[in-house]
Image (cartoon, rainbow, N blue to C red; front, side, top):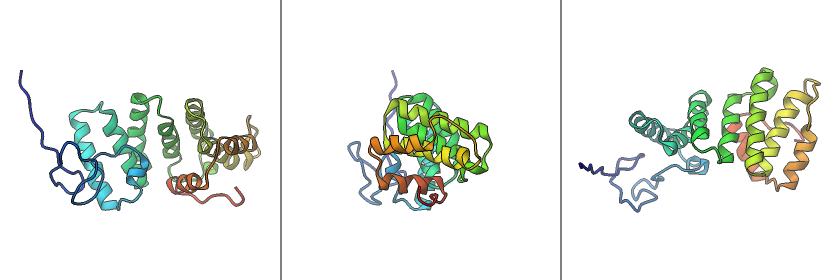
Length: 197
């Protein structure tokens, strides 16, 4: 039986890492990207290094669930929605009980544009992902995202849907919506928050 030893290096700066490290001692970047918060403070050049590193890893092991998720987060933060989408779709297949992944997949479907500007089938797919997130975990931000979709697409076009955006907003408040989550959502969406919403 042959074993291979891989020396761990930082994805951001290439410095050697110990197996117990969670943050690089040199560049202070995360050893592994596991959440969207891991990439919030990263500059674009650093994000590109991480994304390229994960892409290379995925060439060797395309079914690596954590690498798919990490690459998706990098591309989403860079607002490269088309590049992030296939990674999120693969991550959803591998981590079907991670509600946040469904939200981020839906965000990527909008490609940085308002729901109003999309075809109905795209909005319906985004709503399906949002509903899946709500079924897995009842978070206010999931209901708020659904309310935004239903308001900006259905309400603004005079179309009916049940539950409507008002019911989703009520569900968001009941589930404990935070304004920090709302600000982070619109940062990821790359759109302006509707007035009074």
